[in-house]
Length: 165
Length: 130
Image 1 (cartoon, rainbow over the protein chains, first blue to last red):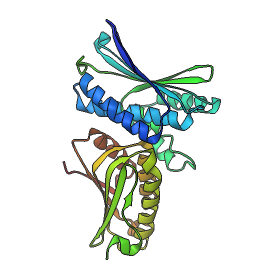
Image 2 (cartoon, each protein chain N blue to C red):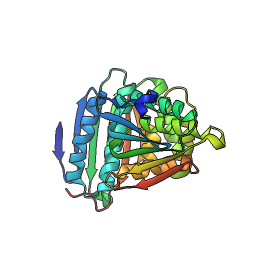
Image 3 (cartoon, rainbow over the protein chains, first blue to last red):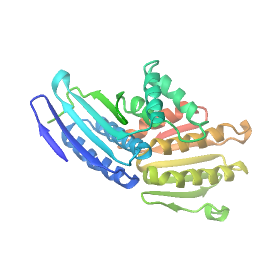
């Protein structure tokens, strides 16, 4: 774990090979961390869910089983929190993530999430609900960067006055 | 008659425990712990058994008690939604009500249950039982 305090931004970063058990352990760990950093129980719960979903995504699709989790927060521009998960990914996975995120730009969270849920019941494999849930229930904006075969999914939200450190 | 009499017993996973009970036409299912990757298959299998049981008739309501469920991932959420979709697909007179008992101290529950209720509003009741 690395932690760096700067005037404008702070972050913590973890590199690991996530399994189901490790992801749950990590969710509880970062929940404690969020509780120290943020004063809003609803936001803490949302961030814990988002962290868990992103790590499960990496555990399912990482080409080498490894993932990096980075949590950034800043008080600038009213305060914001960003959760990034980076892993090696296939071109199919990158395309699926990009298409899902692109769809999110076409509608409102509640109505489009209802559509994602309707579609999830007829999928033969998987639910594809992780990213839509982060966006709708987690109320976080999503984006995706790709460098070579490494994909970084970024979830961010404004924190207002919730940041306490 | 108990749930084990109809072949549905308590299930214990690494982090998830599913406990069924039968009460005068109602089936009560208690989910406790964490429903994550390791609990997904358990939940899917269990809900298939519950659906097979309720399809035989005489069940008026299934209560899903999640007051002791600290987390549910999107795969397990989807397992619940697929089960609800199966109930929704039954003939009108064969459908049973689905009641969720939730915990207001776990904020994720209100958000996920709102999404689930939107999916099948006519079937689902949500009771926030603290």
